[in-house]
Length: 114
Image (cartoon, rainbow, N blue to C red; front, top):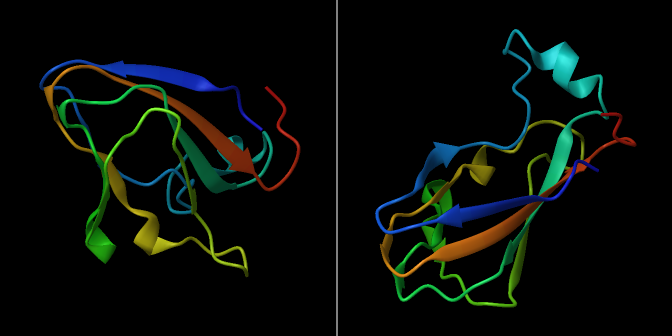
């Protein structure tokens, strides 16, 4: 597994829609998967409540998860056959009021080598 990443979002900050998997069409694909394989899953851990905004949005499935301190959210970045999961597109919505603290852990297909 990759190292735990802790993020802080203040008012107006967001993370635009993106995928956590490594795209096979990307020039750095081989380099990225060489360190532990594909990112098969993502675990988000909400470390704070957010007064307004700051949800995790999945636009392709019309779902938004509101951050709540102590809650965790797991989603798969690949399908069971190892192919990429296009429905895993997600975004960190803008924080409208308060501060959002979030920890992210990416799970790899194989042991991670830094």
